[in-house]
Image (cartoon, rainbow, N blue to C red; front, side, top):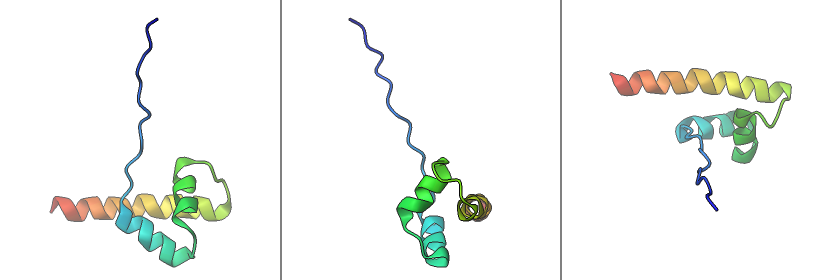
Length: 65
């Protein structure tokens, strides 16, 4: 009996951006993570995803300098 040992790939999120979104929207980190995964599809979730992409790109730019 051969099993493929495939581990679940977890996404790494920028915690500074997650905390900033939490403070801005007043939501839980769990809701923000669910929004980023695609489990939530509300209007707020779409705003969170767009803002997370923008802010994480800015953080990456700052770290590369």
